[in-house]
Amino acid sequence: MVNVVAPITNLSQPVLADNQLPKAEPDNPIVIQTGPDTTWDVITINNRVVQMRDTANFRLTVTAMTATGEMSQVNTRGAITLTHGHYITVTGDGYKPGTEVVAWLFSKPRRLGTIRVATNGSFESKLLVDSSVEFGEHTAQVNGFTASGELRSLNLAVEVVEPTQLNSAANTGSVITQWRTLSLMLIPAFVLAVGFPFVLARRRRSLASGRKHDDS
Image (cartoon, rainbow, N blue to C red; front, side, top):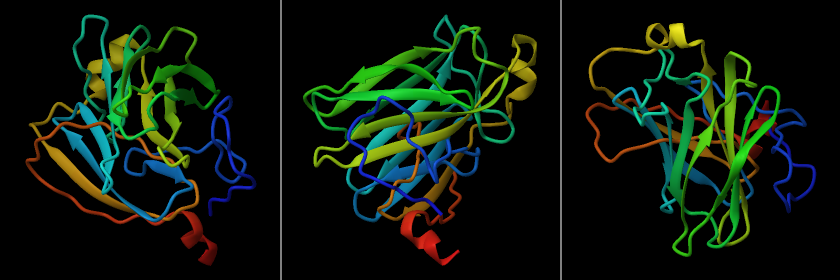
């Protein structure tokens, strides 16, 4: 169950679910939003890129990148994988023009940076993961407001590993695109996404969050 006690008007702190930091799993990104019901497609491309997009042309794409610009692979569970000195790259469209999107990384919350939204609603940034981040599983959270002022918080699984573990943690299989569909209700739910335009294979699943959880 995901509850929002009061409307969120600023992004100075991470967005919580049930008064706790949300924990995204590789196969279960979380979307927290205060807008109407939304259907999201989540795509993993070539074992390197994760993208989330909805039916209203909102798109968030996330990858991990080395200092030399090479994209890291996701791990065998589908989480974005990187190490100290690498970057989380965030690009997309759909937040309110002229506002700022805020990116976080937790278990222990740390603000990775803010991203200015252009006049056309697009945004992009490269955010450093430094040596102060503990090795292990984390959630990357990207928060902002839509053009109509609704909160949209996107949460995705990230794994930070030691440099010697980076290759073994990756999935070195052939080019595969996984496609999942998430149906989300209008109470906040987190989502993370990374993406590219080509699709080779599909997998569908449905995820309900928000008010629908009141039945549980």
